Image (cartoon, rainbow, N blue to C red; front, side, top):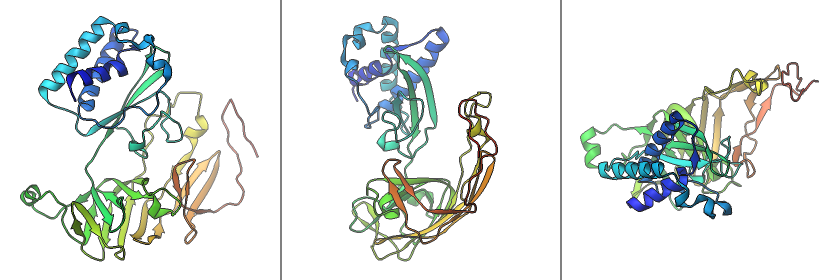
Length: 338
């Protein structure tokens, strides 16, 4: 990316943001430096919606404060001279306060299912909109294909048995039948899990570890690590549940949501091949909402499905109750009972 291109992007994204104090301006400056380092190598779109009023003279370059323009020029010059970039970070700018694939302008397609490692904002834009910047970490994963299929079947991070010098000399993944999955994320082709899901969508899960066992050694077809359609990919994952660390515990809003307790499955075992999937086991789950405890067990052979409105793969569960009773509701806005 040239200096003019990078400067133009920073001016468009941050030039018209309002700050009310030197502290806020310094905070914005820190974001601009991180943005410049990330954008210098980012081929992905920074936002997924455009408004016609953004092309009006309200947002012309001459309306940006001269001091901020000079600072942006300094940042861009320093970033390009150092030739250092946040190579593992990608940024997305949103103007909605929640992150969900159901709302345009909230999450980019390339980060669907991912969680940002850092969020800055909100900053107030010249048009009054609140702006947040989400920074996503990009990791290099092992990509496994099934012969004849365009998109990968599964992506994961694994431990290698090769010596470090051997791996540096040959950057390709080891050709073995068993891989030890490392903590991080595993991404499974959604169409393999549910036949009505798009074949370019992926279901991601956070894992503590696990194993992926193949019944035949994979081979490289070009640069793609590939197994035959008849080969089974046996996946056993130890799932990790996120901890909500940023709930507003003192806020009068959302108290019923904060009171809710969820225990997600700790394990998930399944088999993938050219014909689809076979889920063999899922750990139990439980929840307590509005004072009602509910235990869930996997429904077994019932078919999975894809909900396009939610952009989610749905796996059927059985609950241990047939009637939900509300015994605790603390919302001052909407009260449930019964």
